[in-house]
Amino acid sequence: GAGVSQSPRYKVAKRGQDVALRCDPISGHVSLFWYQQALGQGPEFLTYFQNEAQLDKSGLPSDRFFAERPEGSVSTLKIQRTQQEDSAVYLCASSGRQGFFEKLFFGSGTQLSVL
Amino acid sequence: ELKVEQNPLFLSMQEGKNYTIYCNYSTTSDRLYWYRQDPGKSLESLFVLLSNGAVKQEGRLMASLDTKARLSTLHITAAVHDLSATYFCAANFGNEKLTFGTGTRLTIIP
Image 1 (spheres, rainbow over the protein chains, first blue to last red):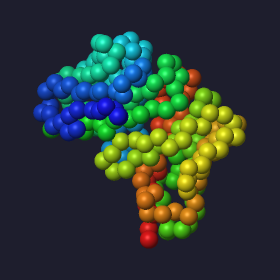
Image 2: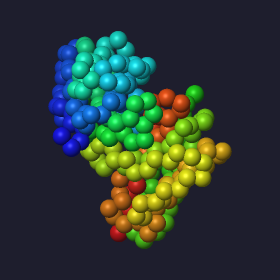
Image 3: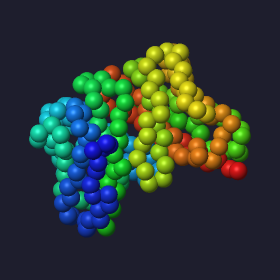
Image 4: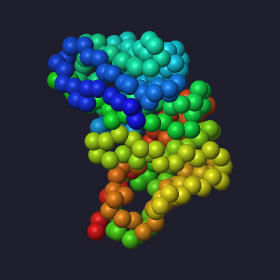
């Protein structure tokens, strides 16, 4: 597609439920990022892939968060045993360059609400 | 600590006026970014500033970078309603991830 696509657009989960968020980056983009944006805040880095390799996962808040990109294109962010503090917008972004980049293209995000 | 701070956090401007948003960052950065976000939407890239003294302009928006002062500015000229949005600056500190400021919510009043 023309841009970064994320699904679902909205997700409501009961506390303790597992969720999976999908990201389709721009075709051919090597780098893929996940960010978490709380209400009224700037995005915060979660994790970064270069092709299928997860090079940095320092921003994942706990071991309940897991991300994968097995074939170097589509990525999934999984949150196990969701908690209320996980409620946020999860943004995926991709970039065409390896290593340093000039421009990130963001998806529209998945708004997760944990009740 | 790697920090990016913006001010003001909230800004109401009259149409036709000029104003500047400031972005300070805590340590040496390779590059500085400005993004726009409309309510409920994703982030749109506005500018990427790569070196000291860099200045970029697009329409009524102009961004500049002073790496010695660790300061970037986003200047708005003759504001129009369409510029109402939240503006974020972000820096990367020697790696691939971006550290974002908390954003400046800009409202243009007719």
